[in-house]
Image (cartoon, rainbow, N blue to C red; front, side, top):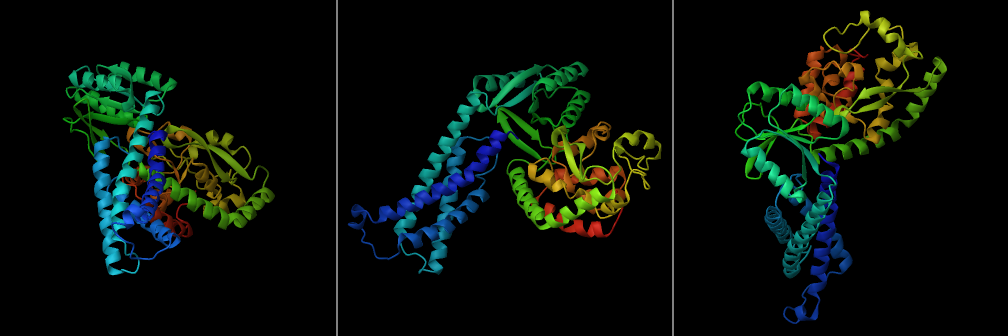
Length: 462
């Protein structure tokens, strides 16, 4: 998901809220204009301060109705569909308000203000959406935030899609390359393109492509965390998360690697940031004490930066309290023959000689991972997600295992609370893949609540 798309989606909520406040305020003051009072005299008394306080809470409820009506979905659609949703949502919200005031007439007694507010809200929200729509088109026309696309196929479908994107730059797509099929040569050319620039979407437009090439293309997109779309007649791929759209009259299905997209990504980030800041404030005394013990019990830095692979294969440095002797990584090749995790790419050794005495205590209680709260605040990690692995371990991932790179790694995750490092590698992959495909905020909260119990259980800490 492009940052521009997420940004515009995120600002819609505060803009809608301000627009609703404006509509309500205008409705209030219009009620007292002479041309209105001459027709319908004022028969209630409510000063503006009290009215605005009620309006502030009503606008929040209104926003919730908007969300339930799909006005904040991050999906490209026509303005006319937005207008119909705005009308329905404003009407539904107004009906709710009327019912609420019916049961408590003392709250508010001006039906004219409610009616005027309903009409103004539709007008102002619609105008706001028009402005946002055309601002996005300006950005797309300048090439900002456009999705870069590769088309596979040389049939009419492919040409229709290419023409649509080329003739309508404000649609927000740019065709980088068109290949007639997907063979080893195509894969090599795509790898070269990826070294120099980003690819957002790969569209398979030819339903007649051999099954072997289709499977290879799906695997390639999984390996490189690329969005995969294909002509609607192709139904061979297992669909867990998908979306339907049409380009140039060609119906397309987009196979999503995770439910964590669009607003889900924004909600998860806000939840991570707020929760991580609270945890950092609460645990700051403990962090200081642990850091001092690390420095006093062995030579070396208090906190180490270890290379890991994060979302979309991006390298970052994970922060941990040092639990090993200085330059421990240099000894790892010598200990490779003692690796107890022969079932996958990970390394584990029960009596690892590199671990310090205090380091064993830190690892036993997973305290060495607490500095990763900083990684969460900085946006490199999430509180919940697949375990972050080393570059050399990720290099040995099989294609299906690379789905774990579709989202940010986490401090804790389904694998950790379901057995921690006692799990076989394939079981860990299966659990984390389920999380990637079925993410929800409720699932995050459930995993976080189970984490302390998993730590106290001391099951396979490593």
